Structure formats: structure tokens, C-alpha cells
Image (tube, rainbow, N blue to C red; front, side, top):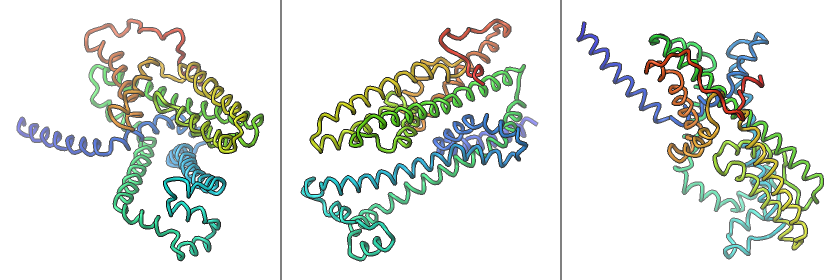
Amino acid sequence: MDEKRLVVALFGVVVALIAGYIAHRFVAALTVAVFLYYSTRRFYHALGRFRLPARLRAATALSVIAVPLLFLLSSTIVLLLVEARRFIERYPIAESVGGGEPWIGRLQRLSDLSVRGAIDAYRSGQFDPLVGLVVDNAALLTNTASGFLLNVLITVVVTYYLLLDGSTLHAWLLRFDDDAIVREYLEAADAELEAVLYGNLLNVIAISIIAIVTYTAYNVVAPPAVSVPYPTLSGALTGIASLIPVVGMKIVYLPLAGVTAVPALLGSDTGLLAYVAVLLAVAVVVVDTVPDVVLRPYFSGETTHVGLLMLAYIFGPVVFGFHGLFLAPIVLVLVLTFGDTALPRLLGVDPDEPSRPLATDQRRLDEFR
């Protein structure tokens, strides 16, 4: 019997090592999948009130997040290309930058973006430099695109089946319960992860709305020459950028203010820069500072300290890379929940003792349901 147990244990270790290697290989996709799962789970369960099939509810919950993000990304790329072309047409810099690169001048002459115009441009050789650039870097571009699509596929599939079978996985883990410690820890960690990650989604939505209203109101009073381009898109990008630690929304509204000031600088109308200064000041106060001070404590978890959560967002990308932005908060919640639930039980502390209350300036997310 002992020999059989040893063989089974060795087999289990091998399987665990293989699974661990695969998970490490795709840790970024799996981390984002967990983030999306907890961000959309409440919405998925809310759809159950309409008696929809589970698969339809999961697809709908994913679509609410994925479709807007894909539309936002594609719209941003298209608008950047269109605005770059308009800028080249309005301010001819092809001959003033670096002696005039040939492909810049050729792009400037591409006035017809129709299918026929593109075919004529290709036949005349105007796309030759771009084609050569793509051919020279074909391997890199192919690997990058295929890797990105593979990670997106893994993220979508894992999130979809977590929404469908998350309760089954939870029940399987509870099979290894010991004196209810595992159950208590898993339930507490699950609830806190949902509170923290769902709170992040609410924070993004709230800041996006604030930014859109701010940029739109600015455009009402500002001259057209220094108006914010595409205020709705810019506001949505500002909200998404709030997930990035330290710099956060600054990577959107600072370049946005710079782009807004370009026409005034090139037109030698420096008086209009006062409007840009007002836009920057309002963005710093109304879009950045006030929401961070007011909203973040409300949208934080039930027990996770706001300061520790901010440090997790700061150190996560530094330690783990970009996906650390999602992984570090998850690790923090798991560690703090273990210290708050399982560790006292393991050390023999009475579980009926009252836990440490929340700070006076921190509210529970459940109060806003």
C-alpha cells in the first residue's frame, strides 16, 4: 500500500510540475483571466434574474468588457492614423524633419484613401518603403501578433469557463478542508478578491465618466483651435489609465494637453495657451486628485488596506512585469486574507474574537450594493 501511495504521489508531483510550468508560461493571460472573472462575476450572477442560460450569461458578461475594449483600442489606432495624416497635411514637416524622409513625403501625398486609390498608390511604388519595413521585420511582427492573439484566446476561454464552473472548482477545493480552516479562508479570499477587483472596474467607469464630462465641458467654453480632440474617447482612455500605478491618468491627460496646445504654438497664437493651462489644472484636480482621494477608499475591498493596495499596484509591474498590475493585488489579497483568517486558527487563536475594525475613512463595498 505504501509503495502504491508513493507511486501516486510521485505521479502527482510530476503532473503538478508540468501544470505549474504551463501556468508560469502563460501567467499573464491567466492573471488577466482571474481579474476579468472577478470583475464580471456579479454581473454574470445578476443576469440570472432574467432566467438566461449560463453559457449566454457568460458570453454576455465577457462581451460587456471585451467588446468595448476592442472597439476602444481599434478606434484609438484608426484615429491616431487619421489625425497624423491630417497633421502632416496641415503642417508639412516632410522636408523639415531629418532632411525629409521619403516615406513621409509619400504618405503626405496619399489623398485618396479609397480602395482604388490604395491600389494606384501601391502600383506607383508609394508603399514600397512600408512594405520593405514589414518584410524586414516579418518574423518579429508574426511572433508578436500570434503571441498576442494566443494570450487573448487563453484569457477569454479561461474567463468564460471560470464563470461557468467557478462554483465547481470552489467545491473541489473544499474537499481538502481541515477543521473548516480551508473553507473559511477560501470564502474570505473569494469575497475579498471580488470586492477589490470589482471595485477597480467601478473606479475605471467612474473616472471615465468624470473625464468625459470634464473634457466635453471644456470644449464648450474653449475655442475650437484648442479644443480636446475626441473627448469621449479621451475620457475612456483616461479611465483605463487609472489602473496604472504612480503615473496613472497622467499618461493620457498630459499628452492630451500637449496635443491641444500644438495648433496654438504652430499658429503663434500664444494667448490660447491660457485655455490649455486651465484644461491641465482642471484635469489634475477634478479628474486625477479628487477621484483618487474620494473614490478609491469607497471602491477598495472590505478588509484590504488602501495604502497596501496602492503599493501592490506600484511594485507589481516592477517585480512581475506588466501583468503584475493585476497579479500583485491578487497576491496581496490572498496573503492578507490568510493572515486574517487561517493563520490565527493555525496558531490557536479563538476565532470568535472580534477582528480589527475598518479605518473610519474606509467604507465597505457592500454598503453600495
